[in-house]
Length: 229
Image (cartoon, rainbow, N blue to C red; front, top):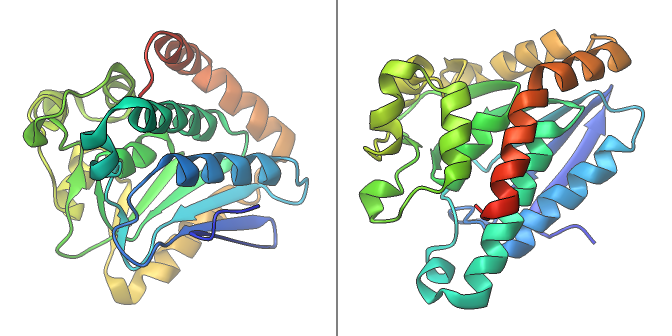
């Protein structure tokens, strides 16, 4: 059964997965597993070529549930394992993955931006980035590896060890986003990006994506075999 915080729609080869808990879209093990399970179902649908993953208005996500992190023990470990599995699944999906960053995207939600094929953000007073260190939490090897693969080298230290958060415009420069658009034009900009990926030959795209990501995928798997996210 799909987690009630996840909505799926599909039309013309494009599936949209919307995350909306009515609040901060904080991740827990159930939501993380739900994303991965929904992704697996979409991958079996031969009519789907592109997946758009988006949040609620103003909020892609607020990261892992802080109450679960603070509680520690088995619930935290289960959430970490689920998060690692979800990120690897999104990174490795044969679908073209377009991330619609609809607002704030911090910590675990910023990691979603680091596994996507394309990232379109809405401009506004939003913050994007890996802020774990600034919050007194050690950044795990998995997000560091993802950051190394996507973020501009001059910004890498500040964005990881510095725990820095960025505006949408800054996030383009740093490497979290590929493009941004004002709220009034956002749906059109997102549709334009999707249109770049939808016509690609399904099998050729999947083969080339697998080749391009093979080394990074192997590195992520090796990291997760030693330590969850």
